[in-house]
Amino acid sequence: MKHAFKIFSLALAACAATQAQAADEGAAFFKDKTVTYIVATAPGGGYDSYGRLVAEYMQRNLPGSTFVVKNMPGAGHIIGANAIYASKADGLTIGSFNTGLIYNQIVGAQGVKFDLSKMSWIGKAASDPRVVVIASQSPIKSFAELQAQKTPVNFATAGPGSASYVETVILTNTLKLPVKNLTGYNGTDDQLAMRRGEIIGSIASRSSYSTFIENGYGRYIAQIGGNDKDVPQLSSLVKDQKALDLIALVQSQGDIARLTAGPPAIPADRMKVLIEAYKKAMEDKELQARAEKLERPVEPAYGEDVAKAIVKALNQSDETKQLLAEALKSDKK
Image (cartoon, rainbow, N blue to C red; front, side):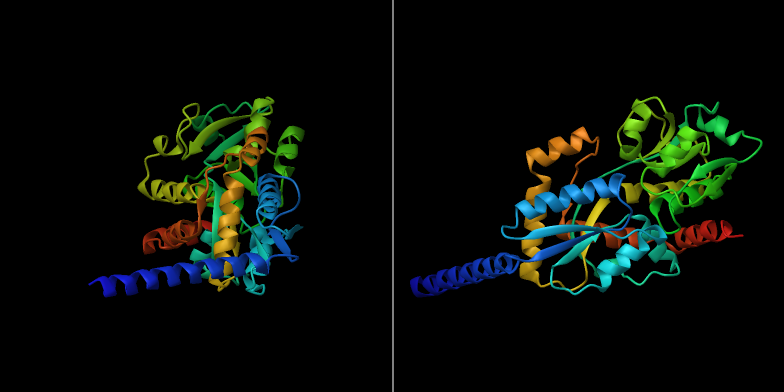
């Protein structure tokens, strides 16, 4: 018995030593290397803010590495996501894109060359509820008043494929809102357009609009997800079950916001190091303080937990897939 226990103990020690050696080798790989962090949108706005924070603090936690942020806007984040997916699986190219790409993969949107279920998931930085925002100069002060408009009002979205575009289209079409969706508003373009009077409203992440609202430029009239009590939940304002199903889908995307991922098949030892560096970055008090100053929430999750959430979000019922496809198709007519 003592002999067997000794053999078992030696085996455990050898396994631990092997794991430690693999971790050391993974960390050593990044020394004197440049990591490209792709942000799939233009400079400015929430994705760029999170991406630059993540890159800066991951670099601090990967000694000897250099992180370079590369903005790759276009096609509602599809171009940047395609570039990340197609990059060499050596751990030196990672990046961020919006959760609207989940919708695009579900419906098989044109231009999608990635499979989110196969990507190497490093983490997510936040949970970010969606809000319906109306410009302060508009007389619309409630969701009911928006529904009652006799002529369509202009809403801003980013490019087709972005969460902004997909969520605005599926919600406005399913709820039959009198809204005309205008595309091409990236970063803070939508907020500037609202101040000019060019745009009346937007459906976007709450964190992206918090300063805009605090400065008196707009108002929230409905929210999807989150625990805030100052705005009515959209689900409480509608009764149609199909609409409620799509609202639930949108809420699931807000729960896994501000993602960081790499291409499929990054070696396990390098992934472990990247996830650990990301975790240390997200738990750094200085990063959290800077995020708070920028009014960007930090509610992280890591590695496998994020991968499971992505797979779950992709696994929708046939009915929900059909509703999503029909809503997007109707916007092109």
